[in-house]
Length: 347
Ligand code: SF4
Image (cartoon, rainbow, N blue to C red):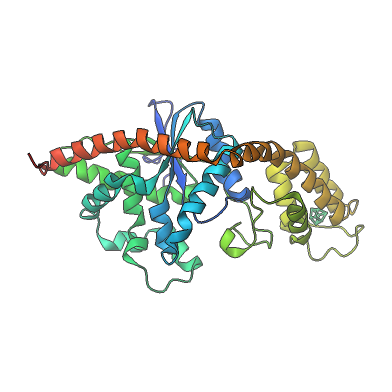
């Protein structure tokens, strides 16, 4: 098996200069600390280095939430608010509402002709997500969302996609689809590379491998501090530890994994030592973590309050970004259709 470094789908910054990254989220509800650790923190860093496009993928949200399209508008706003609170700077990052770019749907249709169903069925990310959600039958939209993701990437001419290692099959598929399209129609759409995120997932408060809104085990970025304190108090620790003087195993403790994600080196080491040697109680250890998370979220809350008082400004940021991205999308679609020799119009 290829190592990450050797994999052709992974960016090699020593050989190429990358310019535009595309990243995004499905607006299915407020974002949480798992999103922060898994991607938002990295995006804030990357926006200084690359032209950053962030797609709020409301159409893709329907792949799993099609019964409730009426919730999308509110969720789009909440996700945008979370971005701005985290430090996404609208002067550096272009935030886009997917459904307002109809060219994506059109390019998705063209790409879908080039993909057979079996590779989608066997796509590990699709399989895992379908299993997690208990889907026995997959809808056409759910099965095809890697194709529409490919259209998202190609339409905005993005050359770099920050992803976790588990998302790599999507990028490989995207490259295959774009390569096939280019070869077949003599086109020149950009083949994306994956930029592998070093930090990956945060476990849920219940110890579940993944923090997720749908599992009810998440600390939302917008939760108030009383609620966060309560959630931290309820988190799963080393269950064999009854008294503060019992020797514990931090490796199986949710709180310790959060210390690893958010605390400084000293506190991480101290927590590990004190837990293993029965020198700290879980209550105190959780209080320490709460303080760290509070410090992280305080500046976010300030930005959140600012934008909550200026809702129109948030929508304006979204519409301005979408308009800018729309120009690129229409240019790409024109190029694609001309290559396919299906560029006809009323005159
Ligand atoms: Fe977890 Fe801290 Fe309790 Fe150890 S002391 S089990 S690390 S909460």
